Length: 204
Length: 94
Image (cartoon, rainbow over all chains, first blue to last red; front, side, top):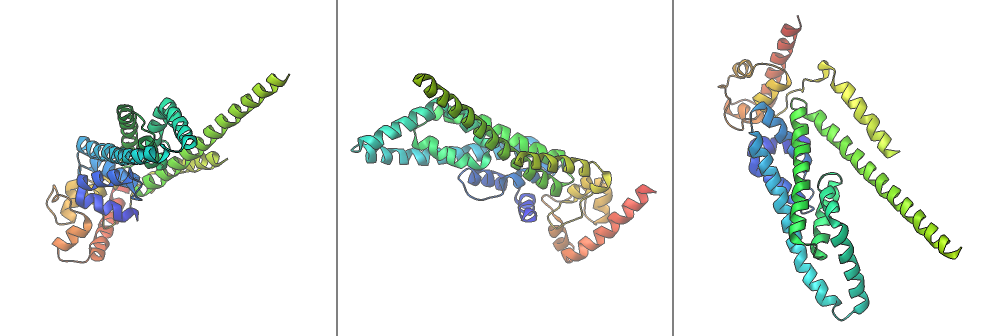
């Protein structure tokens, strides 16, 4: 699998890298991290140029995010029409939208690179809840810049040992995912503890 | 707990990788001559000569492409290259 994508990157270069990052932002199962690692290594060996490689990966990712977001905005229209005559569902939707508008930005940023498997779904949710387009674009582009820098940089670091870079990247994303789960559960525990104390305090 | 597993794996990996003997990646069909030269710390022109191709190599030339240009199978090319790399390593380590 890793050989196949590396061969494609070697043969088709930047258009392929662009296509892979674009598709991966739409939840298609393409090995985008391996493609970026390989391309990063090729920038060291002189087969590809660094700035063009970074630009191709970044442009593909940002356009992919925008496509997911805009598609979901059409869904938002249908959701509005559907909930127009259902006040309870409407209230639930409004609540979700307010929460995402208030807290969504960092979530968009982190779901680009720290928990990147969630990225495409974050795009759809942002579109469905009408998260402001400009804020989505800015948070998203910042996150994609980190994502591209991380993987292309790792590819450069391990330029002659891509087989190991792939393994290392797998460990790293596993570590990130584990840390994210820990972070969320820690937040959830302190949050519910505080909530319980508040309720207990009210009864005293 | 899971985080710990990945931390240990990552540390193990870094230790393993920092051993120079583990650095050279065996040639495979997708590799470009420059990639192999980098992985084995060989001057690109020496490798180009061994592969009988011009330096700089043709654009996007992988081993598969070079084998096709030279009218041989990729297996034969990789076998030839493996011998060259082994000799090169022996020569530089003496």
